[in-house]
Image (tube, rainbow, N blue to C red; front, side):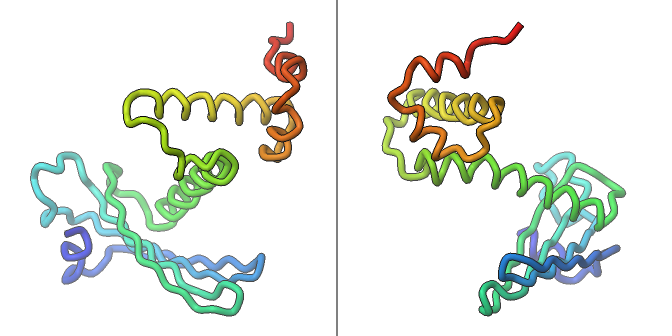
Length: 160
């Protein structure tokens, strides 16, 4: 639906950036539309449609991805939206990498009631305690503290 609403209308602005490093070359083109007249009226408050096209090479293999976003921000530049998108994914990747890789949250089979939510809170608390104490690599921190309750208590004690 979002893609179709931008098909015949030219973007009001586009911004392209390039990133090179860690075995990849990536181009990101962000296009913005402020004409949201084709979006259903039930979607109140939408003022911008954003299309991110990323393409390049990872380990010598070409790739291309399209992502569409909607926003309640109006009159925002394509460059600013590009910055917001990068910041969002940076935060998302930093936290969720730990939750997914270290705690295997995506594959955890907790009951579908509030238990899942409570375990997710405990995982986030654990990550924050380790980071607050200067332990940046979460998996080794967990492995070295898993059976050392006295050390864990030292980490969570409030400093005066």
